[in-house]
Image (tube, rainbow, N blue to C red; front, top):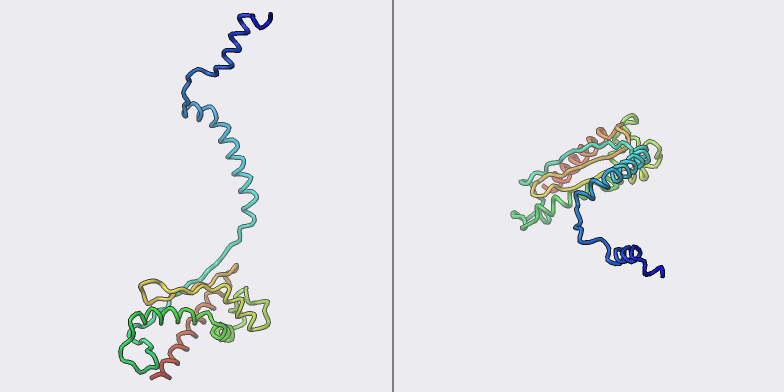
Amino acid sequence: MLLNHPELVTNMQVLQEGKRNKPFSIIEFIFRRAPLIILIGGTLTIIALILLIPFKKTSYESSGLLLLDPTKQVTVAGQQQEAFPGMMRDYIRTTALRINTKDMLMQTIRKLKEDELPEILENNTNIIDSAFQLSKNITVKELPYTNLISITLQSNSSKGIAETLNVLMREFVAKNQNERRRLV
């Protein structure tokens, strides 16, 4: 008997049919949900900033450029008059790799004064460990389509990084000049 009640029948028909042809409106959705989205998004952003900002460390870096003279290419065995095609690129790439070698870095560390040592080297008593630590903080790369090599030294402290980079570049230039004199 209860199922034949006219009001109950119309309510059941509405439930079965669902909403009638009301199109989705993005603007109504945004106005209805925007305050909630802004509130939750803003709260999460503030929490993330509060948690992440204390972990940000200051990083210092010193950069330098070395220009390789293209007129004085080293040729195979120092005897050929003409360089092989692509040889200058190989020479620049090889020269860039030679900057960050253990011998070059050890020579640089020996030339530094005690007060010029960067913070990353202060706790190391062994020169080989110091050279390894220095090599982890140096980035050497060739600049494409140029005869330039970029050298960057990074540290958590500004103390001594510029002096170290200058000594490294001076020592590398001096070593290259000595090698060229021996070949000639």
